[in-house]
Amino acid sequence: MPTGWSMVTGLRVGSQVERNTYDSIAGLLDPQALVDIFAEAYWSTLSADLPDDTPSLTAEERIALRWAMIHRFVTTQATDPLDPNQESAE
Image 1 (spheres, rainbow, N blue to C red):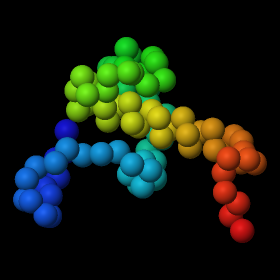
Image 2: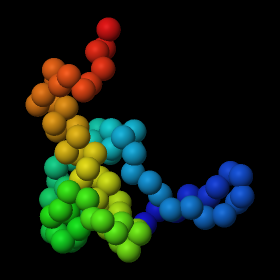
Image 3: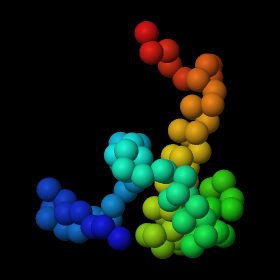
Image 4: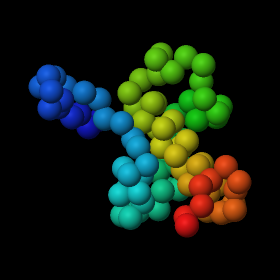
């Protein structure tokens, strides 16, 4: 998995999938395609909403889980734009 370097310590840090990462990748390919690939490779991790013991997951499983969680959020946001929990764009 990709590794970054801390600008403060110079030590390696694991990558983290965030919403801006999702948006960047979604501009290149269909995000559902990655969900499908991750679901096939890590089906037990993605079958539940959120495992109780995430530190026991591998880095790859955590990235797959994070991608799936963001994808669910984005998909829900797209299908329910008037969700009262979302802030108004005004």
